[in-house]
Amino acid sequence: MSVIIVNYNVKYFLEQCLCSVRKAIGQMSVATGANNVEVWVVDNNSKDGSIEYLQLLFPFVQFIKNPVNQGFSKANNQALQKARGKYILFLNPDTILPEDAFTSCLAFMETTPDAGALGVQMIDGTGQYLKESKRGFPSMWVSFCKMSGLTRWFPSSKLFARYYMGHLSNQEVNKVDILSGAYMMVRKSLLDETGGFDEQFFMYGEDIDLSYRLQQAGSYNYYFPDCTIIHFKGESTRKDNKYVKQFYKAMVQFVQKHFHGEMAWLYTGLLEAVIYLRAAVTFVSREHKELSIKYQGTPTFYLAGDEKSANEVRSVLSSFPEYSITEDNEKAREWIFCEGSTFLFRQIIEQMKTCPPWLKTFIHANGTYTIVGSHSKDQRGYAIVMG
Image (tube, rainbow, N blue to C red; front, side, top):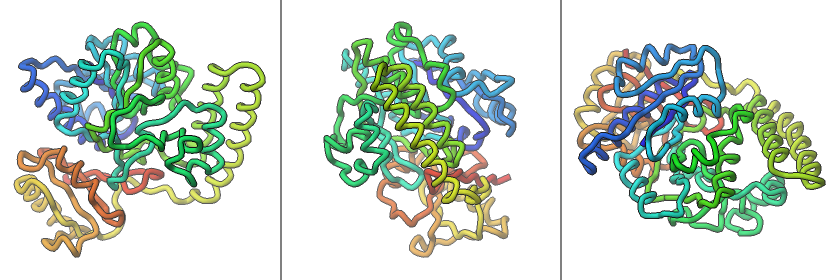
């Protein structure tokens, strides 16, 4: 299997991601008796020293450094051309995987011959289910329902909520139309037939296009909730004015590519109208709300999870006057889940699902000097550097 990650200025989140990838590789090696996973990181000219920071920490990763930002699609395709795995996993850098992610997903693909691609259940940095874990084909009606609010008003309707396939259970395996590029496992033989991501999509819409082309090739896309990952989302996708324009521009490109005649003209007109409307609303509601990657305020943390890992965090954070640590979990509104041998990434993910919405959670992988968290899917996440 080949894991492909595209990075752009998120080295601390990618560090935590790669720690979880390493654990997933380790579990699969134990299960299969072989280490047959390669990991590619394509860096799109990051300015935060990502390559220099990560290379020494993760010698098993093969890095590709681009002199300019090539965009998400082209960067993925660069690694795809070099990949040798039977399966390709396109993975976002702001994700955390459970230790059994690879074994469970590969077992499903191996026993489901008609599966061309697989996506998983995703939760955000607050533990909330991400609806884009499974989506329907964005026909004109489906898109109208989403943009008009009908999907939000009738979230379980087969007629009105097909954009997020709300009529299908989040807890059951199902065939779906569209998978998220944050975690998309695809058979390499199928990608050899269809090609990788369409490079006209710079950042958004490429997963919709690829999912559709995989279906057109006669395979099925499966939603597989037996595996749950964290996708911080706000770190790599900020819903500012620029995001709105890029997202809907990508949708216009998708329509122009796959729709023809009068329907394409009407659909494009609808999308262009929405671009101006949403951009205006976003400008008014989100301007001046950009957050720094440095955590603001004077939080009081409760350390949960692996005791050894938590003690390491405690010893370092205690020297920072802006942070305090409490042993009373009921008094803390910020929790740090410390991963280690007695508290796995899988347990962190399951614990986060049960957290109340007001609780701000962070994750620390054992052996690292960073803590990451994201408390809004619309804004940047936070990284606390302990050194």
